[in-house]
Amino acid sequence: MGIPFIESKIDRKKNSVQPYPQPLGPFAPELYSQISKAPDKVSVLVAVELQTIARSVQRHKQWEVIYAPVWATYRHEAISAGIADTTIGDKVRQGYRLLTSVAGSHQTGVDPVHRRAYRHASKLLEMGVHWAATSGVTWEDRLSRFQLRMDWCYANLLLCLVTIQPEDCRERAKALILEYERLTDDYPQACIPHFRLHLIYENLYQQEADSKSKALAHLDAALLLSKSDPFLVEHPDHWVKSTIIRRYAVSILEGASKMPTSGDTVDTKSAWMAEYRERLCRAFALVYNDFDVHRFPEADPFYKLEKQRRINNIVYFATLYLAAGGEIVSLADSSFTKDRFRIYLGLLLQPSEIDNRRQIENVRAIGIVHTIGCAYSALGEVDNASRAAQWLIQLIVDSGVDPASDQQVMDVLSDAVTWGRPQGAAMPAVAG
Image (tube, rainbow, N blue to C red; front, side):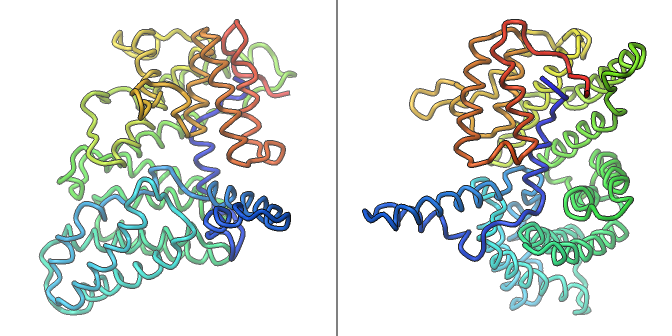
């Protein structure tokens, strides 16, 4: 499989702030659908360019659950109703309705076209935050006060994600860091402020020398606090707890020492492989243990998306372990066998809307198709692996990404080339 690839690498690349065509970009899909119907040659040329722009905008959208709303879709009515000033309460209610309509949809993702909505929602929610801080009225509902501040920050986080100019993005991220740090001081038992700080330091505020260490420190705190967070008491199985676990598991692998080169000694290579397998075991145990695939809630699309991501990590870590020369039985207790491995792999295949058959062509996420192909290859199922490779290539072509200018996509394609070989998945390559 080449250098070990973790699904979140593609996600994290998508989550970075990248420029996209302006001001035409957000409207390109609609314009393309209209102009492409015109018969003249000029319209055809314009339509081709619009299609390219539309693909660029589509790639900019954020589909990872890490940027989904933690509370806004669940408690906004209770929060708005708790504000004694009914005028302010109505404004906050409007802000929540706007925020949940553009950010509370699994289908929407984080989309640049909603920049104005994010900004307006932020201003409306800020009215409630300001009222709670200055009105002198005692608001007994500590949970609502906390969540209102968090959702105001969340609206600003979305706005930061779609900020075009790097310097503007940096300033927004810096202000967010200060506000989230105040929240960690005011609510030291809450895990979500630390989780948001982790994401900001990792994806939006990377210029500082200690950004990486701060990102990891906040992720450590988020994982520790998530086990007894009083602000998640109404949702003890909240999907965000699983998301934090997945992010932490990835950090275990990313903490491995640098891969040895072809010039290193056999002992050096063996020591690295032993460390790598040990880290894989720890990462796998974290995502597999205490996860019941049949009991994990599916209350809304965010729960369903997180469940799919969790299964994806389980399958991928097991696949990497096989490719590194490990045995499935060494990964966890006797409950995880090759048969169970195949069951989890089958759950990644999406059912057809027509006949409910599960097949890879129903899977649209490139990272998950990559996982499926790697797993089939590791299991020696050559035909299924070849089918996954063909579908992965088709998805990349449809996305408009140029592999020559995108190293992450090139790595995925390099893996796909090996999937049809009868010897199964290769061990992680040694960097030359």
